[in-house]
Length: 521
Image (cartoon, rainbow, N blue to C red; front, side, top):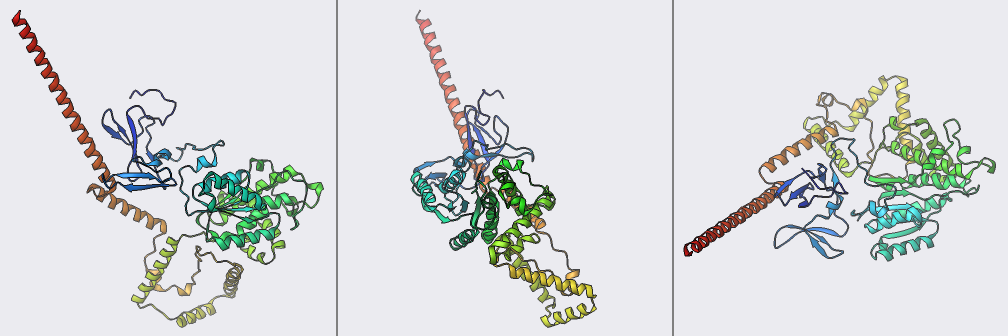
């Protein structure tokens, strides 16, 4: 196909139009040939639209025509074109098929353009100026509730006022609380205030930081750059972990300066992180080291909550050492919360689990209990206790000691956790005595991934069956589109026949006139 040159790969040739189906698939209509196709006429790529409609938009059905229309309530306009077409993304043909959408020159408003963040909650430290302010402004403009954590409440109030001036409804979803990262007691007060007004946090953005300060110590006894940039944010994340649910994000603003840090496994200690004297302090190196701490903290946090496999951490020893040092340094200062920090210094904590998985776990337990009752295997608690006692008497002394130690550890950890996360499943280890012969002989349970794959295949088969019968939205849309194309072709055929008939009549008339003129001569 010979196409005219264009400055943009995504630009359509003349006579082409981009449309979208109900399920989000993008197709292209050629008005010259009256044909449609799924691939872009220039790039040959397929596209899809996904996600919610942009802020202020709503999809409706036109009462008169029955067609889908899109209403822009902000500008009071109506269109047949899905506004998400402006943000359509190409479908990946393979994992390496990647095209970057944003770069260093992209603004926060450009990144969130078209997103609807109503119902989301974001907490940003240092949101009154700089990157934090631009992030807060963009989030607020797109419907997100934003909590400012600032040490200067007057500056925070001015920042919220600027957001309110740019868009009247945006400033109402912003609020500010006092937070001075150089004072750990205010970090705890700030966390308690946030817990009082929020049930969950969708985005925890650790943005605040200092740079180029002379050597000073905070009231907690740590070097200021280290405490403000890393240690206080570490503590804040720990205090707010009960508000982080499935889908929540912890964003740590770092810097390329972390590449020039001088921290190593050999010299990593409390003294190198927070020097005791001015002689061992250099403001630039202190900043570099704090940014390295930010990066390592992010990776180790993901590992603790099992979002990264252990082998993915490039320097596991350094990460573990920094984590333990941060916990130890905080424990000396924060008092009553020091014992709770021991939870973060142990094994990986349980991954946050969504409500659907909790409901699935409860349903499986009920089915297992019902099955036991039907099999007549509903033993009393006294029988189980006596069975446990007999088996424990037969066990060796070493096994008794190990089981008592495990129970003591589990009991101790449960006492240390002050705030129970409702989205966390507590895995209880089952003793051998509680496994009956019927359970051992029963069929093994399918894993969650296997069940999801089976359900996915069933859903696909069901959808294909409905699609073949013309009962799906996609099938109805395709049939409607084909009917329109068929009607357009019939109308074009009739026009061509009418034009041909007119030409033939004109030719006959001209021939008759010519013969008549010749007859007169």
